[in-house]
Image (cartoon, rainbow, N blue to C red; front, side, top):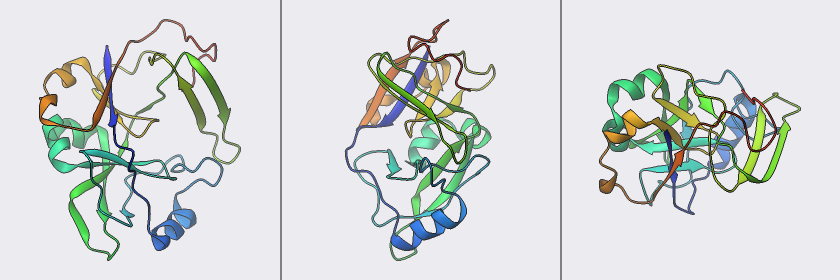
Length: 192
């Protein structure tokens, strides 16, 4: 069993105009509005400080952000080993020390059972997937990895890692249990 953690807020962040220009010129895929394959840690300049919880995301560019205190609660070693962490800047260019962007060295697509749509980005080749209903993973995530980036701007944690976090300390986080299925319910096969 795995656990998907993502922001439960309806208040995503946005890049400043200058930050969006930099993203378009360097790392943002024009076909799917996500970081280009091979993009590592990202620094972003936001138009306001994130709020409403320890996880959030930058609207329109597929970059999740997290409070350092939350990442530390997950575990400094595993976070630094499995995630690529970047800086977050406010609209005036000052560093928002309490926030970090994160990108997983491993990224998982959270699958669903209803209203499934899928395409390959014609620019970067990334799988662009959407589904509703009961969420699950297919295929089995790689052995030896306990934390992943999800395609839904969140984190996927192993059961072992999730059990070590005091989730009652955190608000505005949505948590979904993710069973690993032997065959996908959406008939799309392996999307790695």
